[in-house]
Structures are given as structure tokens and as C-alpha cells.
Image (cartoon, rainbow, N blue to C red; front, side, top):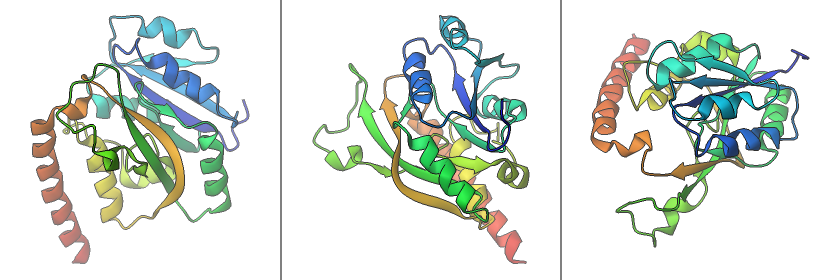
Length: 229
């Protein structure tokens, strides 16, 4: 494997047999070939391991600890690439979006990372109180989420990994630390991620997420005040 400009794609999954193949197929359908795919499996009891290991060259790792943040951090430790990105097992990428993001970062060495746009869609049978007429919620939007992020390894060395104290909001907390350090993430005007809404999304635990958002906002304020001293 050519390690120059290697992209490490970290896929975190637990009991994901229903969606995992679509996610992994969307990786293989990209027109950028210099990548490695790392699947971190949180002790799945379904066919997740069988599906992941059916893909040639897949790096499959059982998670030692628990939680989304710890799984992401495990992937970062295993990753060999200088560029790192993520794809949740129940989402998938727009065709050829990876090569465009890589090309941009390689052409702009002063930029530490990029984010792109995501588009939400309903899984069949998804139960929601959200109005189906709310078209704005399902138009492409800027996605400050690991699924649209492509970052240099040095960004994680500078900011740190994901905080395991946050069950659901670990992604938001990480982006808050990036923002607090005034690190520029370039927003690329392109669709990167299709975000599936289904009944088992972690984000559906709204009360837990609200509490974590309040905590991370308080921590962010303290950091900003400390940086100004």
C-alpha cells in the first residue's frame, strides 16, 4: 500500500448488519483508491463481523472499551494514514466525494481539515414527530459531523481525540474544541454524506443529548476565557 496521501477511513459499528454493507459499498465506489478502511466493532451479536470481513483488505477490530468516543479513538490509534475520516455504519457517502476532499487538502497545506454538506433521509418505518412537510430539514446542510470531516492526523495531535465522558455529544464536543482553538476547517460546497434517520439513532436520545450540549457549552466558555488570559 502506498502510504503517501493515504486516507484512513474509520467505520464504527455495533449490530449494524442492516446498514453496514451500504456504507462499505459507498467507500468502495469512490474514485480515490489510496485508502484503508478500519471497522471498529462494539461487540456486535449479529452478522456485523461476517459482513465487514467479507471485504478484501478490511481492517477489522473488536472494540476493547465501550462507547462511540472510545471506538473512534481506537480507530485513530490504528490508522496509518496522514489523512483521517469517518463514516458511521448507518450512513453512506456521495459518489466520488472523497477524491474532491483529498484534492483540496493536498492543494491547501495550511488547512487542517474540511467539512462538507450532508443530506438527511428517512429510513422506511422510521417513527418521528417531525413534519414530513418540513422540507428545509431535508435539504443539504453544512455538516459539522465526523461523516463529512476529512482531517490531517496533526489536527488530532493538536486537539486530542473524542471525549468518552460524552455518550452522544462526543462529536459536537470535539468540534467545539477545534473552534475554541480557532482552527480553520474549510467548508467545501459539496454534498458528502447521506445521513440516515432511523429508530435506533443515538441522537434520538434527545434529553441526554441536551444535557451534554449544556455541559460542553459551559466547558467551551471556560476554555475561551482561559485562552484570552
